[in-house]
Image 1 (cartoon, helix red, strand yellow):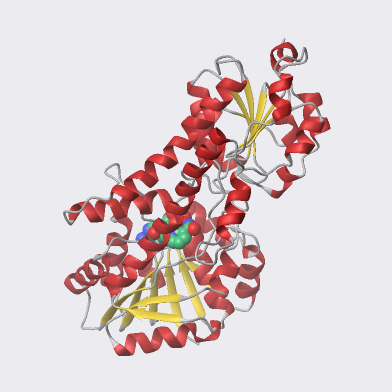
Image 2 (cartoon, rainbow, N blue to C red; image 1 turned 90 degrees about the vertical axis):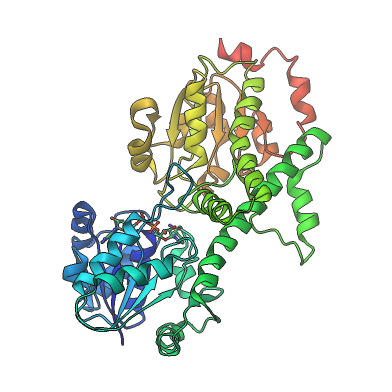
Length: 453
Ligand code: NAD
């Protein structure tokens, strides 16, 4: 049993703290946002993450998990302090280390015993040194502090399973005693441990996220070619990805990547390279291909709707950046909604769990609907922007009855094209040949223009 403090109760900190408590440790989760803390102390989870509320309740009941409002009131008696604060993107593209620096200073000022400070936030190379320097300069007493890097690879939506059954655990550490303690802490998970120096561990996290983002942009570029040459990107992925050297993960053509990690981490890596006198041609292209997905989707929608989005009404299904989360940070679905609004369309948006977070991000510019079929009401087109499972089973008979147009734009290749077309709707997927039936229907009297009128 270890006494642990976790600073920051976001997706990473709260999952880390709760899972470490589940492993039998005594954990204090520290959150300085008073609203969020109040929610946590009431036994609720301030965001959507499957299974987390139950795990949190169990560990609170067993007295292994509690919450504190500040580092000063939280880290006393802990041998291990995890830093899991946000590192959002600055306008420059650099990671904002403001919260990391502040946490380091607060740790230094509240130091009551020797501690292992474990950086779980995604931070640029050399941040471990920075945190160690801040603590060294400001610490109270002569307590030893060792700073290690332990980047987190969990995915929102499957965070608990990812934490409990990780592919690997990366520990950046130079001190053998600190390494032994980290190994002991994670031993119950039985996962492979990769121990490196701190800078290498920091670099591993950026490399992993940048590589996954690269795969997404790669397949989106392939998808654009598929559309032009009449190939089907899904079969292309199956065919190429069956090669064990390639695989099919992160090869879903669609609206592109988003969320609180990939966009900012790729940009931060570009900035790290730039600061070291290097150019990142590949990573720059990954970002521009990603931005292109929104532009291309608007262009294809415009074409489908007789050349303009102005005055069109579009139902957007899915607002979260991916399924199984209510996180809308850098969500491609919201980027699309913004682009449609900018072109003079009106938008109705639905999401199974992200309506509130989307409202906070977009305000009243969107009409939010609690029922997915209401998003189709009077719309010229619906767009599937996040591939929630429930959108894979939509009743297109109902959709057809509610739409005034006839366009289903499946920006995540989530639906069955034949099922959509069987209801007399025009189906647009990503990276797929325009259906033969579709062009035939352009001359049909029941085209979108007629049904819109
Ligand atoms: P988040 O923004 O959701 O949560 C951070 C929390 O820390 C906030 O609740 C904030 O109020 C709190 N906080 C900030 N300073 C504090 C302080 N001094 N004391 C107490 N609380 C404080 O962030 P997140 O999504 O959990 O990500 C945290 C870090 O982990 C980031 O660096 C991110 O890049 C990285 N990461 C995120 C994910 C993910 O899927 N979200 C996955 C892997 C890594």
